[in-house]
Image 1: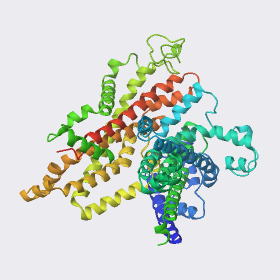
Image 2: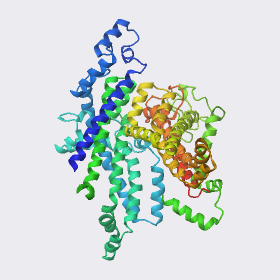
Image 3: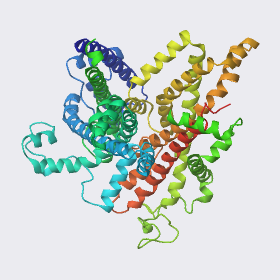
Image 4: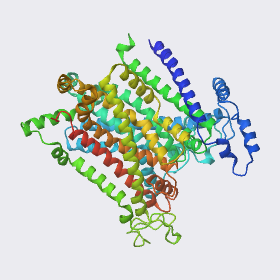
Amino acid sequence: MLLAVIVNRAAMALVTLAGVAVIVFVLLRVVPGDPVAMMIGPGATAADIAALKARYGFDAPILTQFWIWSEGIVTGDFGTSITLHRHVTDVLASRLPATLELAVMALIVAVALGGSVAVVGTLLRRTPGEAVIDGLNSIMLAVPDFIWALALVLLFAVALPVLPLTGRIDPALAEGFTTRFYLAESILTDRFAVAGDILSHMIMPALALALPLAAVIVRLLKQSLKEAMLQDYVLLARIKGFGELRLVLQEALRNAIGPTLALTGVQFTFLIGGTVIVERIFAYPGIGNLAIDAIINRDFPLIQGLVLLFGLIFILINIGIDLSVAALNPRLRHA
Amino acid sequence: MEHWSTNAKTAATQAGPQPPSIAGRLVSDPKVVVAGGFILFLIVLAVFAPLIAPQDPLEQNLLTATLPPIGFADAQPGFLLGTDGLGRDVLSRVIFGSRVSLTVAFVAAGLACLIGSVLGLLAGYLGAFVDTVISRLVDVWMAFPPVLLSILLIAVIGTGLHSVIIAIVVIDWTRFCRVVRTETMNQAQMDYVTAARAIGFSRPAILFREILPNVVPVLIALLTLEMGIAVVVEAILSFVGLSVSSDTPTWGGMIAEGRQIVHEGWWVLAAPLAALFATVVAFNQLGDGLARSLDPVLRR
């Protein structure tokens, strides 16, 4: 059953990605702005521009260009970045781990924060405390990661200057890594001082990404928990003498968590999208920050590679959601 | 969903046979009054910016660079919220910046609403083949992550205010289309539509004179929420330099400048950020309040 889901989704994913590839390619080729003319500077002659165009293959007919490009994709070659003069695949591979570590950290923070506030809100139900939580949360739901990130910059730059405002790691410590997953590697190799430095860089961007998702989790999970607390099995446990906290955590939570899990998965794709601007604000060297540079510089090969990479990530997350929902739902599992 | 039923209950017990008018319900909702009042205030600021702003928002003066707001040491009278790195008055720039934000909010959200609603009305009322085509289009559209779409669009059509508006419309018309389609389908089942058909009204007449007015309340709430989204998107694109040119004051552009000199002058970042925050929350709370007050259950 699960295997069938995987095969089905993988096939659909390939079709979607192929569609995205074609759309991206065609859209970028109808742009009026000429990337080669932009990169070469004002002093260049027509011959210089033609030579450079030939070097990047922009002089070939559009169908030939697409053929060369799609041939490259199949073999893992996305071309050469115009501004960075490196293979797009290499650039993406060196930047992706930073974004993945940030996004996963933000997800953990969001679930921990949103989950605990929802539990506290459930314990405080029908008290003024619940009204305070609901009121604050209704404002938090309106505030996007962009505003959170800058509010954190303001707070930590001016009032509480304890965290680094930019980057991913102190350059002096960024030595001796075999992978680009700095945080995971430093923890696994017991270099906790380095891990601490990476975490201090990660707190603000992760929190900015996590807060909007946490607000969504609070609203939905608290609603489900309150409904679950009215069920008979909770009443039974209450008669057995279970404490209120134990009722929420052991009885209600298990039955209330389903919808929240599904929604968190969907919202995780928004969180990944949010990395684009949040990485920019904190000069964090991930693929989001790279995407903005690529657009500003009209670096076509890099934009194409980035869009496909983002598309792939979104598709993988959606497959992951489908699989976990199927795995958690006993009716689907035995079908 | 929860407040619908409670609203219906309180209305039934309190108001008796005569439910309160829509205007009455709007005025009695503090959310709508406070948030709506703030938006009105903002509109006045934007329209009369040249009369209200104490200084020329573009006038540079390096002798008065990075002055702090009034109340802090070294502040100078005439610069209530201080000056930025080029000596320009922060308050005046925030006031002028509201022009771009509100323009994008109204134009982009309005266009997205117009396109989405027309398609939604057609899909919901005509059904069959038209519905299949439009619904499939919406599905495909929504499968494309907004970030990717906006990256691509800006890369393709270039930077500028027009691009920002086009990007928002192209990405967000689906929100309106989906909701209006569902609401239209619900309305089309109602007795008044059957009655109108029995009298012999034409299809366009039924759609635009009978159904549309009943979809409008939902639409207004959705439009208000979308305006908040549009303001943020514009600020983000200004922040990264993909919106209007840098000589027009925008909140996003000011935020970008303030981010650079946050250690020398935090107010350059704080002032536009506060304006953006208040505007986004106001649009959101107004949309929430409107959705509640214009509740279809209470509408008679």
